[in-house]
Length: 365
View 1 (cartoon, helix red, strand yellow):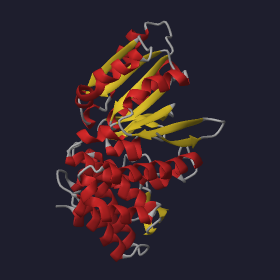
View 2 (cartoon, helix red, strand yellow):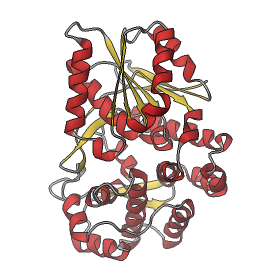
View 3 (tube, rainbow, N blue to C red):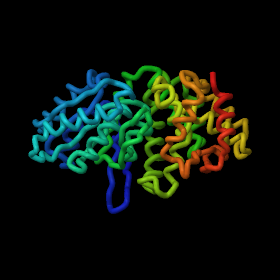
View 4 (cartoon, rainbow, N blue to C red):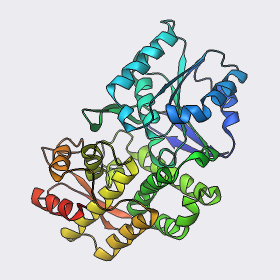
């Protein structure tokens, strides 16, 4: 297995272990780390049906005899206070008030990772947790960084916290069960990294789109490793998003989150980010800081992947309404991460609302 370490302040660090067909090693790995005595697995109905029983068996063979499993319906609509409350109730019953030194293990994509991480952050004022990402998107983005939470009143990640995992355990072979839409969704975040920090990564994706969509792991593994290293470098410098460094990861997410919410989560997260990126590029071109050929290159790649670049499933007024709830806003003004050139971005907040509306109108299908 390859190891990528994330070194945070105050001597805190954790590892990302990347391999193939290595899930069977996680039990002994966690035993050696001594990060918990009992295990509470959080997953969704889709992933749980594929891997949960196998994972329980792995843990029990490693000596974790006190193991429980909770699952909830698959999809973003389960990322809510109801699911969170049900999981907390189940975990409290499992713990039984005896402070079992429980370890939460999140198995799945972004939703189990976010909800499960928030459960771990708030149960007994914080317990250890592990991420086992099973989607491309979770592997390249949401699986690390410590941002955990739930949606509230359809507003993305409105309730949440920062709580870092003790381990991210990656078995790339688990990606083999992904459908085409899920692969495309994950690639949106890879394109994001290429634009904000690593233009050669963008070129790599352009060259290998067909192989990536066919789940060629020899082609995908370098993408996953590179994405983890890029995000780790950013998180190390600005763990809690207080210095403006981590803000760059929100490229495509300001409008993307608003579209995702306005459409009632008919778009996946990656699809929403794709729309958000082309809108951010349009804004950057409109204010004269980004050139149109580079914007067209990004849009062409997103279309080639099969991601949306036009807005459907929602109304302009609803997008504007959700933009007002964006967590990155300051004094009522949205802040946008906009590209200046490939590999460099700027944060802009003084963008006239009418210009934002103009860009959105042009993108409406």
